[in-house]
Structure formats: C-alpha cells, structure tokens
Length: 377
Ligand SMILES: Cc1cc2nc3c(=O)[nH]c(=O)nc-3n(C[C@H](O)[C@H](O)[C@H](O)COP(=O)(O)O)c2cc1C
Picture 1: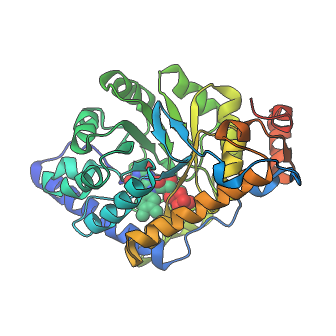
Picture 2: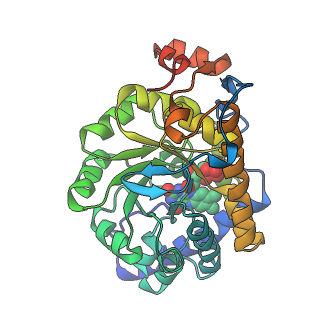
C-alpha cells in the first residue's frame, strides 16, 4: 500500500535497499490483506443511513442511467476501482485483471503508490499495464505527499487522467519502519498541485478526512478528496500482523490498539461536504450497491472499492472482478429503482433518514444534516 515512501537522504546503496524493502512490502501487504481479518470492527456508519422505500417507483429499472461525471470524465457508474497495487513483478497480473474489468465496464481505476517504480524503473510495467489494458477509462496515478518531484513522472508513467496523493499517518505511526515527520506536508501537496495539469485528489487510506483537514486542503486548490474512511480495511490491522511477524512487540501493540482508529466513511463524507464544495469519493468499507447508493445519496461523486476486488483479482480471473463489480452495479440499480431514481442526479435529491451513531456524531460536531432529509442538493 501507500509505502512509507521516505525520500532518502542516504547513499545510493541505501536507496537500493529501501527500494527492495518497498517492493517486498507490496506483496506482504497483499498476502496479509487476503489471509488475515484486517477489517475495522467499527462500522462505516452507512448502516445509520436509510432510503425511504417507494412502492410506486413509476420507472423502468432497465432504463435507469447510472452514468456519472467523474471530474469532467465519463464513467458508466459512480464506482471506482480503488488504487491498490503495482511495484512488484507479481502485481502485474493483478493490475491487468483489474484494468481489463475497468475497461469492460467503463469504470475509473486507480493504481497503488508508484514510488517503487520511480525508484526502480524496471517495475514501471506493473503500473503501465493498467493503461495498456484500460485505454478508454479514467486512470488515477498515486504518489505520497512528500514526493513533489515524482508527480509528473507518475502521471506520465500510466498516462493518467487524475493524480491521487495519499495520506496515511496512521499506517506510518504503527508501521515498524514508518516515517512520522509530517511537518510541511500541506506545502508539499500545494507544490504538487501547482506542478501538474491533471485534477488532484487527496486520498486517505482508511482513517478518514475531517472537516478541518478538508478546509486546509481546499485552500491550496485541490480538486477532490477521497475520504478513505474507517469501516473497511484497517491499515493498523495490516501493520499489526507485519509487526507480529517481525516480533516487534511495541508496534504490534500499537497496531492492535489503533485497529479501529479513524473517522467512519459516511461521517467523513458528510464532514467534508459540510465544510467545502470539493468533489468527494467515498472509499472504505463499501461492500454493496446499497452502500454505493448511500454514498451518492449523501453527496459523494463516486464510491471506491478495494479489498473485494483485490480478492477476486488475486484468486480469480478478470471475469471474477467483473462479477464483483456487477454485484455493486446491480445493487445500485435496484436501490435506484426502489427509490424511483432514473439518474444519479435523482439519487442525490432523495430524502434520507439519518439515525443512530451517525446522527449522534453529527449532532455532537454541530453539523446540520437536515439538508439530507430533504435531499443533498
Ligand atoms: C493491498 C492494498 C494496497 C493498497 N495500496 C494503496 C496505495 O498504494 N495507495 C493508496 O492510496 N491506497 C492504497 N490502498 C487503500 C485502498 O485504496 C482503500 O482506500 C482501502 O483499502 C479501503 O478500501 P476497502 O475497505 O474497500 O478495502 C490499498 C489497499 C489494499 C487492500
């Protein structure tokens, strides 16, 4: 995942060693994600959002239009294959299957952090395969916030339409080799925003983005935020298993106590939209088409999905990835049918019931969510 991408101030051999570790970590992360339970035990809070069932939808389910505007680009549905991998020879086949599925279904796709291929250009083909196999869909490049110099290279490597800059302080803090000096990160992101011509998304990787952080990011001219909220894959959990293997007791202890740290995905989306006019992607624990519909219902432009698609791509074929995506698409379509929505815009204006912990959290933050009861427009 978001490798801990330090810019090395050390000598070349240390750089080579870092590159090797980054490459190894890619596969370790995938193995842990698929072999262990690394999900948050707290919910995304989408369970605290309900649509109002419409017994007289008066629309034709088969005529529902899921087409979405994704940062000025067209997507066949508001669903993104979240950035996950690349950077180890074994990841080429995984990215190939994900990209083929993206192309078949006309959905945007992200790649994992490209730092490894910038350190070692021999690995660039593990990312470039995504553009080769998905020539006509929006592709999202991915780098860490401290890598201003790599932004253009990352975009060019895969002919990307969008750049995602990931933030992962939780993972860094619980990772045995994590880099926890975050001073100046906002300025570095601002430099990247100034240096590239494609839209920039700032992406958390599981702990969510608050209203305050969204406001700071908005002030430096970014285009969108992927909230990467809590409730799905926990990077603290992933690092817990790595630390356990390395017999690092303090780090494994930290991985365990911070397992459920973060802002749940639904809460994070509402916080960002309450404080900015930025476009938002809801990633983190999106598991059904109903989750996708709820994310759009509260105002997200799209929902991102990672681990279920990774599982299909590693253990299965392109058809298995397509199958997982079709489950999301058809779940979304049925939700739209049962709420009388012909288009994605209709979904945004449907009234929602906000209850439970989500309502309590919004109340305690002083966020007025009555607009959602009347539609998110
Ligand atoms: C194996 C794996 C690797 C990942 N690597 C990255 C990465 O390099 N950059 C990034 O921004 N997010 C990365 N992510 C985070 C995902 O994009 C996503 O935000 C997160 O997994 C939550 O989604 P989920 O609950 O659907 O898994 C990775 C996720 C997985 C499962």
